[in-house]
Length: 229
Image (cartoon, rainbow, N blue to C red):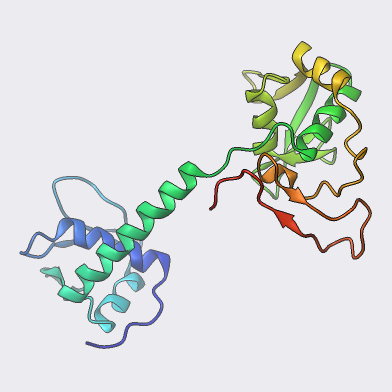
């Protein structure tokens, strides 16, 4: 068998789809539009560009059909099926790891700072999405104080802030009574003199170096009680 190169995600997706559909007799390939094809079957599937197919043939992972003879079925080889099974296992493991990833910590320095910033504003305060980073929200303006959506969610799940959504797609945030009580009873985050970097990774996580250490961009972070990823 030819040594196959590093496959792109699109080619890997085609191989996995072929493994699911080829039960031993091959799978017809049909033209959709604009240089895209699909594997025929009882249910609809994804579309693949013409250039996605050759790497599977070149690597000995598939045989049969090509775009010049679209009547012949495309078949997966034994090597292709073995690789597809390995890719499926990797995808399942990644999905499980993502599901078990430690949830954002509402007691982290990042979350506390966001809560304090919200409390400084008039209530309720507008929230704006970041046009460059999908998982980041800004407070009060498109260039205002920002934090990851996970941090906002952690404060919401803890009942410390409330986010209201309008029919027009906008959203506003307010500090709840629990959030105000939390702020009133929380000591200064820098009172112990420890660098707060990494505290949002989980309960007990964070940099063990003193606050203001140098160089400022080098940290020694312990995972604390965070689940391994």
